[in-house]
Length: 139
Image (cartoon, rainbow, N blue to C red):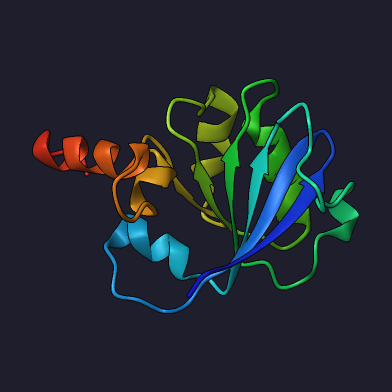
């Protein structure tokens, strides 16, 4: 069972998610973390989100960063200072600065793949994306 904890990191939106253990591929194993922050740059925060990164609880294992209005590397730097060392940079949002940060040995990064297709269940856009990716050999 998955638990979702929404939080906001200005100017990003963050959702903290706690996951249960399961058997998954390398990309899917990212979701095995005890908790993770999902960083977005939505213009309207969801109800109940945190307003500042300082409110992010300690012990967050990893972060998915899906921002387009700012460089994701900026969010990585803030989150690294909070102790997060494992990142998934959303498909098609990696920048030269992200690649530079990811080349360091202190952090782990997944880039070039949509994280949402590894989460979907049932029939939805994410599971269809996963199906097409598997057919094309890009899963």
